[in-house]
Length: 64
Image 1 (cartoon, rainbow, N blue to C red):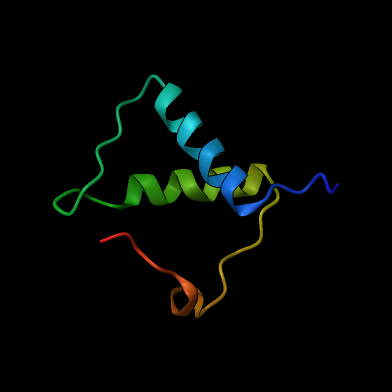
Image 2 (cartoon, helix red, strand yellow; image 1 turned 135 degrees about the vertical axis):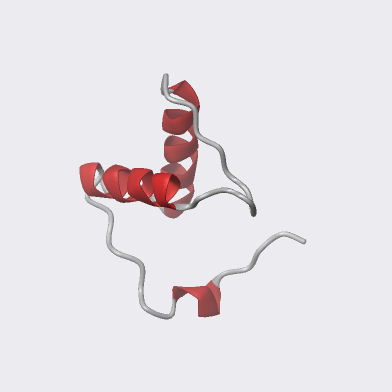
């Protein structure tokens, strides 16, 4: 098996990391999204994850 994280491992790992940080993070429709985007970028960089494809939202489903 590869040492590269799978997509689900990366999601679980990111959520585990942000919930254990001392700094508070607010997320929602009425919040500034730049703090979480910076954390996503940091997490992806540390874990050597690929940048999203330009059209990744074409393949993304969101829960209702």
